[in-house]
Amino acid sequence: MNKFVDSNVIIFAFTNSSQKQECRNILNQENLVTNTLVLLESYAKITTISSEAHARAAVRNILSLANIKVMDFTNNLFFESVKRSQKYRLKISDLVHFTTALLHNCSEIISYDRNFDGLDVKRAEP
Image: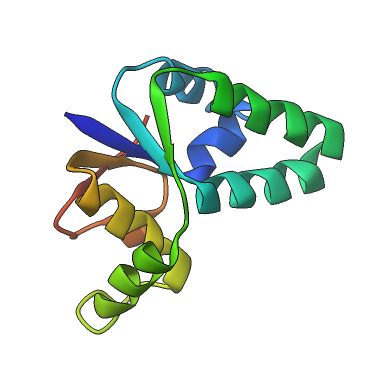
């Protein structure tokens, strides 16, 4: 079963955080899904914590992993997310992540973000 990986997992995996090793372990699992919006969020945050070169390397690393499917942020994904905005009171970026997880049959959203609690896809921490 697929698992969706949120940006905070990638950020912690590529910065000096107490969760670094747990997050790196997650990134080595099979059947992972994320999206290009997660990569953008990760790149932006890693740039503020470290450097642009380090952020580029982190995103390149994710893109090179065969076990992670990176789904494009398309018009279709955006509108599927907006359809859910009344039912799920999430900010739009979290709706895009949640919708990606739904559309790709993910059993979990791997994230430290508690905004994903209580949804149709369970949240799990690394």
